Image (cartoon, rainbow, N blue to C red; front, top):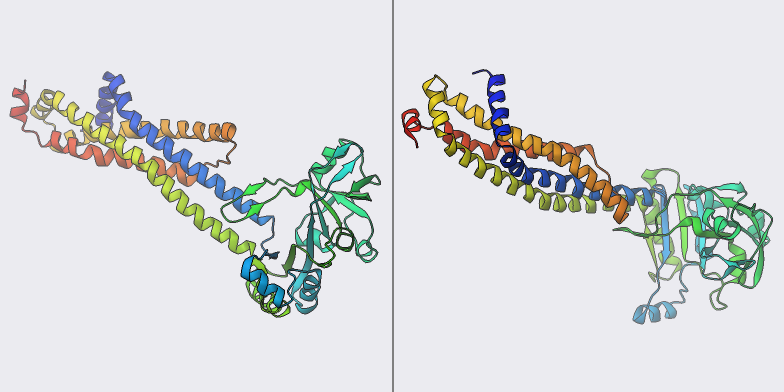
Length: 411
């Protein structure tokens, strides 16, 4: 029997029992849809985390202040280590020739007012290196300059959301903001960046569009505790090449270990390693979620096998007649296999459509990033076809091995 003839008989048999065929397909439909939607959540989370981490710069090293408590704090006090300081940043800049830029960051939690409007942004003391270390530049006006730092000027550069929050559509350049008890002149507005606040699996992210930048020396002079006049929270270091990040981080670590008298009141974060860590975490997540969803496909496959076994029993006389007319065991086996593969492949196609709709719905209603990767569609569809072959093999073989005489006598 030709394959096209076998396929035609298979389709006809499926259409004769439309409702039963549809119910048989449901297990595969939901299984494939679950695989697609689960993997889309994992892929979306992975890409979002990588994009956010890339904002820190893959050529960058971040040195963060660590707040010590208990015996560690007492030891730091005995060894006269006051935590991360502005001088640490200058020390790194002076001693590492392969460093492209070093930007100190001092975070100031303080009230920012323009008229009767208050900003929810955070004030950051830094210098001009910040813009190229973070690849984040002003869209209007200018950024903090060396002269601003040297003269401790009271100027500021605001983020895109701060501009919208305080000035609406008015030009903020040249206007004055009140930061704490001091007036600052706006000299620039940063370009908008797509950033989502929150914590990924490896790092806590903040919305930099809400930041307000002032000269580091002004921040230290106006908004620092008297007993720690040079204290800062973070140093961003950019090296020339990505290959130099890890060895440079090791040198920075040794340098600070010496200047901090052996007290580890800082941590060194390498964004490139965070990306690798994020990818590993998401890979495990995808495997777990995909495996859970694949159980639905297994259940669907068992459902197909049960229905096909019942179908073989129902069509015993048909099998006997076809064998009597010259059909071989291979013809009978091919016919039933065609039916199971058709059912599972059709279910797979409908499942892909349903999974895509579910992924979009999750993105729309839950706000989660979802990305349907090509590999997830191929894997889900491939597994659904495999389910049809594996779980259809036994009923097809049972039908093919049936004795033609006994089949014709079957009541």
